[in-house]
Length: 314
Image 1 (cartoon, rainbow, N blue to C red):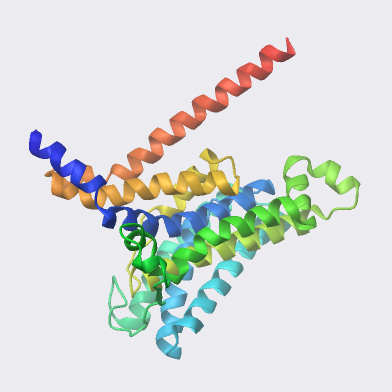
Image 2 (cartoon, helix red, strand yellow):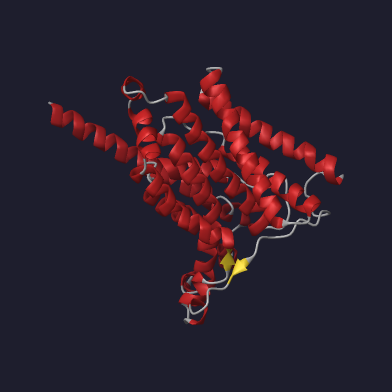
């Protein structure tokens, strides 16, 4: 037992562990921000997992055939936006329940990418036979020379830094722009927004397109920064975790970042926990157990707030 606690302390005092936390948080953060802006517009983007899969695959294929990782990144982002618009078309134009649309997008993402892997590579699980490349890592001058802090914050992939910058961008968009005001108005009271001339469906479509863009970044990270190829099921449920993180963060950019870091912490811990002689089956469930616990805590908090409101009215 003493050895267990010593190993655990060793993990939490290891700078590489915190480097890993920042790294594995990035795709969850992108996806959570995407879910947040859709939620603010009153449109739950349940299809984030499928959007990430399609974007991740598209990025790898475009990168491999063009010979440029930047072309691959742009292709992944376009794929994400198009998938977001598909969700908007079926949910807003054809009036299909948006939850069902999201489930369909997830199923399509899983099935379509699995089929296309075989079409493009002849392999049934990965695209390792294709030379797709990886997006560059950045060593920040000055910061990288700082003991401990430099080894934690410097040397990350460019998309990792962008994911945290995107928190500020999304906060500015939501709370400091006319578009953000319309998105929040439509999400809170679409009838009132329509009465003052706001195009409800147009605004929701824009929000879902931006949500798809964030999913595109998340997917591109998985296959062009986290790994250098696409593998079947590469997202491993991160799209669903993003939905939980969005709910726990109240669809707020800062709250979304904090909850994403929480889940990133457990993802990193699930990797390092193998040194504690914990069974692999238990280790791999840590992020998902954290999701369940987080949702329970969030539900209790929401319930308490509702009771307070009722007591205030009485």
